[in-house]
Amino acid sequence: MDLEDDSVNIDRLREQSKHISGALRELSNQITKGRSKAAHDLSDGVSKELSGLAMKGAQLLVELEPLDELGPWGAESVSMLLVPHPGAPARPLGKGASGGELSRVMLALEVTLATASTSGARGVPTMIFDEVDAGVGGQAAIEIGKRLARLAQTFQIIVVTHLPQVAAFADHQLVVTKGTSSEKGASGDEITQSGITVVTGTERVAELARMLSGQVDSTSAREHAQELLNLAAVRT
Image (cartoon, rainbow, N blue to C red; front, side, top):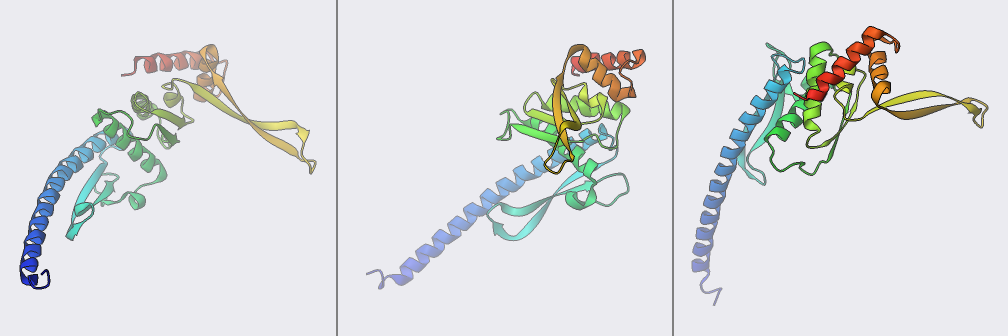
């Protein structure tokens, strides 16, 4: 019977295909609309954050490139481009940014997404930033510290830093040391050992003073270190 009614079945299947194609197109249009708004909001938010991270005038561009036909992720591909400074061409993140710039873009992205999210950690409970403050200092370093502290309200944040302006904003500060052991290795050579110490109270003030001036006993450095801790405690 099915073979005898093949023309009817073909017409029915064509109609179903047409209906499904229309439904897919409608869904893809909805995705495109939402994606366009999200791309604009993300680009705007990250660009504003970069301004405070020693990348004034930098812009993150989120571009939507239409596809020839619908794919599993919608009607367009998404790419992120960075304009590192005014007048520079927009280039893909992996090609248009230095290591330090990439770290700051990542920080700006996470701060923007965490600020926009109302559902807490999105399956990534811990983030690690390795010298995200590379190449900056002064007020820019303080702004990085503030943003990391803000991000730490939602995620566990681990930061490797040499800047006291950033370290002062940490809830817990750990000092990594390296030295040689009194014991000898199998070859008779000295053994290099690493250690880690949590600093609190006066020890933390002393460590921040050392990071500031290289002098643990400097009165002015200790006063400056305490000022940084007081500033960080405000968490503005």
